[in-house]
Image (cartoon, rainbow, N blue to C red; front, side):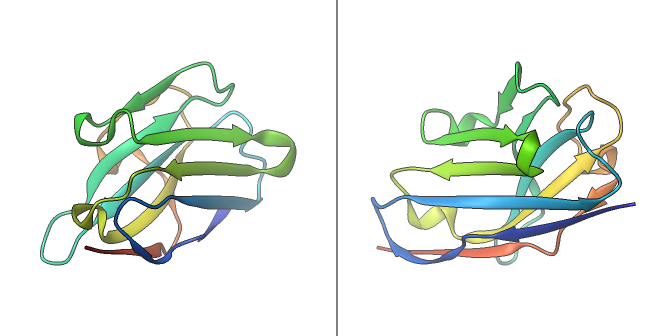
Length: 124
């Protein structure tokens, strides 16, 4: 089993930046692909970005390209999500998820382990 804990969310003004962190514990996850998803109030959970275990490949949703950056530090069992130029529509609960297979994919159902989320609220 892998346990994931997200942190770094908060209330910020539009245009500012945040860095979310996802720390893993339990079974080693070095070979797992990791993704970030978000769920806004009244909406379905959506894919944001993902990264391979080696960090050599990333995938972003079109809506966040150019503003979001995913990275990982396997020595620290941590994946980061840097969010720049925050917009009110980025307001959501952000989840970290890991999948045993190394290939990054977008469907939430492909991911085996989930954190409880960290809330990002962006004011205009």
